[in-house]
Image (tube, rainbow, N blue to C red):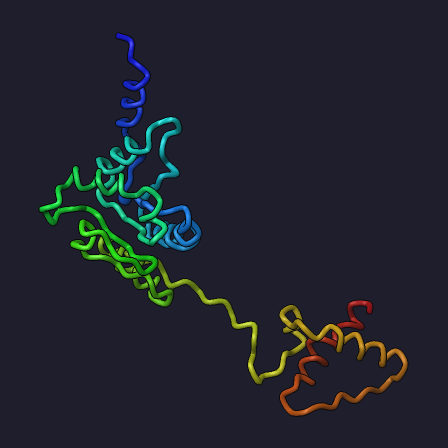
Length: 222
């Protein structure tokens, strides 16, 4: 029997997708946070997830959403004003049809990325509040606990490039910026005079400009 074009699409949509623990739905405007932070953290925790990026080409998105609902045990909605403004109501309607509005058994986890007023069907669910940047790692740990996965290790914080009142040293020259004119002026004077005194108020950066800006310059061939 020959399948129609629509039947072929439906057959493709119900094919088993890769194993998945979590389907992540988000607005394109929030892609940087999802792909730059959330997905990396979930991958470190060993969570198998997918998003619309895994949708089959040429298949109606609603059919792909339906497949995600059937095959992913949990669904994470990254909520923001952009999410509610970009046609997400169709997906929310599909969730309501699949699980009913009167039950508390939705396998949906709302994650509020930016402040907004939740639609009634989502307001009844317990949400993760990620509106505070300082709480993002805690939110991911809570999500991992819900998925019965160990939380990812805390991200290592890079060293502060500003030592405060401690002067820059010669080994700090790679992160010493903003005094190029002063360094060039000192070099020009040294080419004329073999001895140079650097004078200035306490804390004005005399030691830094000498050790991190000036000292290595002759060694670099200047």
